[in-house]
Amino acid sequence: MVRTPRPATTGIIIVDKPVGPTSMDVVRVVRRRAGGAKTGHAGTLDPLATGVLVVCLGKATKSVPRIMDTSKRYLAEIDLSAFTTTDDREGEAHEIIVETPPDCEMVMQVLQSFVGDIQQKPPAFSAINIQGKRAYKLARKGEIVDIPARSVRIHDIQLLRYDWPMLTLDIHCGKGTYIRSLARDLGLALGTGGHLASLRRTAVGQFTIEKAIPLDDVPQPLTEENLISLAELEQLYLGEST
Image (cartoon, rainbow, N blue to C red):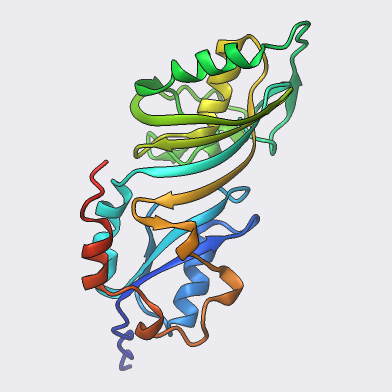
């Protein structure tokens, strides 16, 4: 049996991922529309998250690690009324009674304590490998998942809105930062609850939401004319080093 070689389509497309599909679901859609070209993404978004998903095709897949090393921006809504088992609105909620909600000044002070190089414990429901198994699979079975804290960098946090119990934040952070963990830890620091109500990634390095295409609008067929070339890639993200 003679195998038909995969198309040599090479380049990058920035997809605006909707709520619902996984990042790999998006990759499969792009791969089909590119006629089966080798395809991968540069940084997972949870099914409940939306926004910038950098999808690489052909030889551009070799650039995935480098793109993943760039900084990220997120627009996050955090609910301070409760903790959840998954640190987002998908999990079982445990409401926290707060007699006096923190004022805006206190919230801003605590937010600044998370800026810089910090130690962060990833969520139990995450894709991190623990002895060869995904943490979320162990957590779903009711097993206790204890993931060691790791160093991450948060460049900046801007408070856009605070209307108890909801916070809206603009977060600029480095590789490996879990915004769900930030929501949880923020609640612990404030003496409230804390979980992620919604998340939208607005940038991966130089790839911003303004350059993203809704998943339903990805061309069919997808050709190199629709993609960012390797030459353009060099110009776009070489200056982004964190």
